[in-house]
Amino acid sequence: MPSLRLPAASNAAMLPVVLLLLAAGALPSCGSMERNKQTSALADSTNAYREALRWGYWQAAAELLHPEAQQDLDLASLQNVRVTGIELVRPAAITPQNRVIRLVQIQYVLEDEQRVKQIMDRQDWRWDDARKGWVLHSGLPDF
Image 1 (cartoon, rainbow, N blue to C red):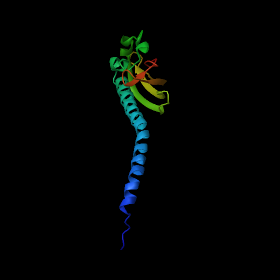
Image 2 (image 1 turned 180 degrees about the vertical axis):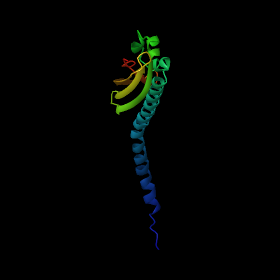
Image 3 (image 1 turned 90 degrees about the horizontal axis):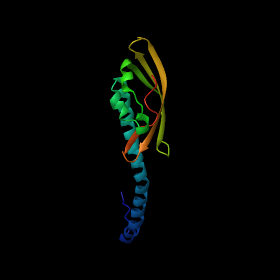
Image 4 (image 1 turned 90 degrees about the vertical axis):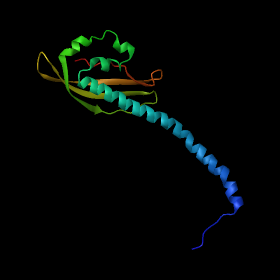
């Protein structure tokens, strides 16, 4: 079977074109790499928050809050709350403003009542450049 061989001059002429195409292809990936890091960090933050709520680690959950959402936070009153289930109702995408709104259904029991209750928690997550991570601005759920 005959092989197709280009003259050496053609290969040399194509080199700048190939390099230009490779460089152009790398530019968009810088932005997508940053978006991938944010997506991964969002999954880490929301998973940590979910686990903190689920197991009653209120201080750990509070550490993921924006400082304004931490003001007047009464963690002692949450000792009566036992979360029994957390379900993502509406997943969210990261907006161009680096914000995510998630809707989560939380089932819980107030220990002194022993009745199952549920609430819808609208979570407002925003990217914090200083922390290089996501911060919850909406505060802890109102049990």
